[in-house]
Each structure stands twice: as C-alpha cells, then as structure tokens.
Length: 447
Image (cartoon, rainbow, N blue to C red; front, side):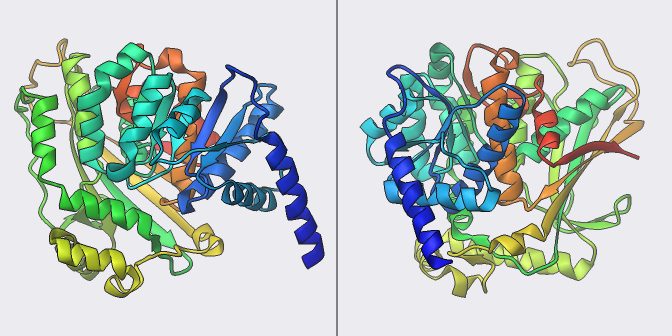
C-alpha cells in the first residue's frame, strides 16, 4: 500500500509540474485559490473541485488554479483533494505567489478572473492582494471578519475598483454570508416593510472540536485595533443615518428569547457588515435601513453565562500587547484547547453543523418612500433559517466559492460596474442562495 501511495504521489508530481506552463499567453483562469495550502485553503480547494465537476457535467466547464509560495505544498494540496474526492484534478493549474512579493501577486492576478483569497489575517496580508487585483483587473473575494480591514478597503479602493470594473467583496464566509443573505431572503419574502431583525446562531457537534489559530489571530487583531473603526466609518459615512421612529432597544448582555426558547449572548461580528449594506439601501436605493442585532443562542442560562466569561477572558488577552503576544505564542494553553494550531480533524468537523435563525419584524403594508415613518408599531413578523455544515471550514468554503462563482457567472447582476461591496449589496439580485442550496446548505422561511 505504501509503495502504491508513493507511486501515486510521484505520478501526481510529474503531472502537476507539467501543468505549470499550461496557461496560454493572455488567458485567465476563471478562479484562482490563493493560500491553497493553508488549513481553510485546503477546504476551499476541495469545494472548487466539487463545483468544477458539476459545471463540467452541465457543459459549462470551469478553469481554475491554486496559488501559494511552495510548489511542493501546492502539489500536496491537490493530491490530498484528489484522495478526498476521488477526482483526477489533472486540469488544475499551479501559480507561485507570495503575499510579500508584489510582482508575484500581480502575475497571479493577471492570470485570474476571480481571486479567492484565503491568506489571513487580512489586516496583515490582505491589502497587497487587493492592490494587485485592482491593477490587473481581477475580482476578489475573501472571508475576512475584520471590520477595520473591510471598511478600510472600501474607504481606500472603492473608486479604484469602480474604475477598474472589478468587484472586491469581503466577508464571504461564515462572517457574514448567513446574516447578509438571510436578510436578503427575508426582505424578498416579507409581504410588507421590515423594521428590524435579530439573528441567533447555534452549533451542534457530535464530537469535541477546536478552532484553528488563524481564526483566533484575526479575531485578536480585530479586538486590538478596534479603535480604528470609528475613524474609518466617519470617513465612509460622514452623515449619520436618520433615527428610526420605532427604534429597537439593544438587548442586554444575556437575555431570553421566548419565541426560540434560547438565551442570547451578544456577538456582533456581522453587525458592521450589515450596517454597510443598510447604508447602501438607504443612501443609494432610498429604502428603509434595517436595525440588526446578532447573538449566540444557547439553551441554558449558565451556558450563556459561561460564554460571557469566556468572551471577556479572550478580550482581556487581546487588549494588551503583552497578553496578546502570549496568546499567539501559547494558544492551546491559554484557551484550554478552544483554539489550536492543528485545528480539528476532518471526522470531527463532519459531525459539526450550524443553524442561524433570523427573526424580522415590520409592518404588513409598505409606505411609498423609505424615509416615510409608520405611525403604529410593527405588526408583522417573519422567520428565516439557514443551516449548513461546520461553520468555520465546510460552510465557509462553500459560501466563499459560491460567492466567487456568482461574480464569475452573474457579474451583470451585481450593482455597478465594479466596487468594494458587502455581500448583501453585491449579491442581492443574484442566485447566490440557489448556489449555496445546490451545494448542500438550507435557506428557508419557517413558521
């Protein structure tokens, strides 16, 4: 068996090395996965392979490549994907690119229609990739949940993206596709006018799992640089939104939602992205902006209380540079295994699923203008449920690739010629939800 595996790997190496120069001059791959050898990148590679196989069966072939620093590791990534999926992957290209080498990034972007960027933390490594895409005319998706990065890129590069005719869309994973597309689905299915929405997220696992430290590093940087967001947002939106007449009171640090039977713990990771989408609805479309709150949902009070303590402890570790450095150096020890450099194994992740339930409230009738105010309080509601595989890697890779495919296949349905957009803006009039469902997720209106 060992000899057989070794020969398989050697054969794969010869095939993959021969592919290095297979791209014709001036030709672009439809999709390029940058950071393919990382923990999340491996799942993204496998998801692109699944989608490419379906596209092939539909007679709409997809050309794609993987990119990273090490040819050897890139080859290993494809071998692992082939062993996992049972697909040949003989037509997948390889591009050598390093986030610290701008020329290599430009070369990669010049060969890409859409770059799927898996190299984080994005606050440290994201901007050079976006710059290369803008210069070479490639669109770009990422899975950043870092508001300073996302809003900073919009402030700096939105006009350049419009002029280049490319779409730069961040937060295309677990942060913040369920929230953004859940609201899109809710708005389309609500018979009337929405005023507010709450989202409760739950996970269920048959085995103990840990979160990869790459996610932890991004979260730590977001907490450490939280002071920047107010300055960037003032630059983006110098005029505040009008105060709603029926303002929804912010929930406490731990509250009970009787409708769902859940205790809600505030975790506003998607709220900055949703806010930018609501600004677009108000400022550009003249529609009523939704008030949005986000929570982790747990069944028992003491679970919620434990979560609050854990979140406070993590924030403390991220607050000071010396504690943050200790956290980055000893993540397994300081988080009791919640975060680990190895991440969870495949079998453990296969037993993990998430559900996001969004509850919207509004009026059964619509006013003529988004600026008009209802005199009576909201009198109607709607509930949307989104569910899928493990949120960190399985669902994130699925949603990220579906977002890239939407830009590739439905660029004509995305607002404007180009720009730095949120998912809720970019994909509001596309079939992204259909693509997600086609790949195994559920998005539905429930009673």
